[in-house]
Amino acid sequence: MRAKKVNVRESLRSSFKDGIFAAFMSGVTEHYATPVALFLGATIQQIGLITALPNLLSSLSQFFSVRVIYWVGGRVKLLVRLVVSQASLLLCIAMLPMLEIPHRVELLLGFLIFAAVCGGLAGPAWGSLMSDYVPARKRGRYFGWRNKTVGAVTVGSVLASGLLLNFFPGPSYGTGFWIIFSLAAAARYVSAYFIHRMDEPPQKTDPAADFTFFMFLRRFRESNFLKFVVFSGCLNFATFLAAPFFAVFMLRDLQLSYLTYMALQVGGSLASLIALPLWGRHADLVGNVRVLRLSSFFAALIPILWLFSGHPVYLMLVQMFAGFAWSGVTLSAGNFIYDAVTPQKRVRCIAYFNVINGVALFVGSSLGGFLASRLPPLFGYRLLGLFALSCFCRLGFYLMLSRSFREVRVTHEVSIQELFFSVVGIRPLVGPVRD
Image (cartoon, rainbow, N blue to C red):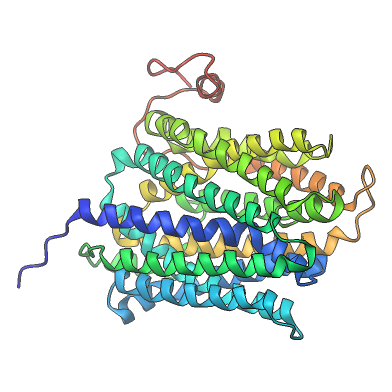
């Protein structure tokens, strides 16, 4: 029997529409999970767990991603089921602020964990599909364009959610949280419809692609990809020492309004959107590794910038710099995975990458939550000490590990300094230069 012909163009269109609605959902869940937890009365340690545990269990669930894909009967079928389940869990979260019941924070944590596990199982399947759809030579520009476009929807959802919350007086914030999380659930249901319209490209079997996690780890000395994974995991650990607590610092310590908080989140997201096509063009020209080295160095500097001022205008500049830096990290890291791993091994390697990074994120968030109330105050705030520690660890791991892996594509050879001058617009790259 002849295999069904895959309509790549229509599948990419459906994937893009799914991305639009998924972006609306992620704008709510990523930026307002901590505010709703604070509204429900969460402690600083619980805030750390709300970031740490969902990401840990989401990552560990990916050990089973390959098996679950075969059990369900395909990547698209699995994605539809997981996205519908995730939407239903978001509806449960939406109800919590409206209910006067005990253990609401614990229930929130449970719902977030199950939603994250659904997202975790979906990640390798989605990444494998997209790498089948998009040829290697176009990934930098395509994902730069796609991430910019769907990112604009994320900004819109963050902006709309903040404005909506601002319309409610303090005791009625629960109604605002109910509305925004209900809308996020509805958007996720629509995502499932568009995923259902995507085609499943055939996958070739390869006995070499069937390897265990410990077999993967044992190849550290000769595996360029594993060295990249270790760098990424260490950077994630150092980042999430502080990352869950920037929102706590703004809302609890600086007493910023939800409107100001929303504006700061939007500022960072807008900077990310503007920077994505720029990073994508440079990644296609000079390779993902050089872009990752430059952008991750910028990302390492972010926490220390929070020490100098708490004025909203200054923090807006910090957030914009952070959006610019992290857009380069996420784009180049994701595309490097597609370049460095063969299609047959891609689902398993994406899963193992996410497992290692999820464990690093869990350890960083948990340690950050433990230290947040125990470090001595710095400039009057304990969290500023945690931010300084995070910066020190990011720079340390960057210096030790950023040169341990190499580019896998043939690209123009340029130095990091030349790439920096080109990215900031001082001197564009005009051809290959000796590194």
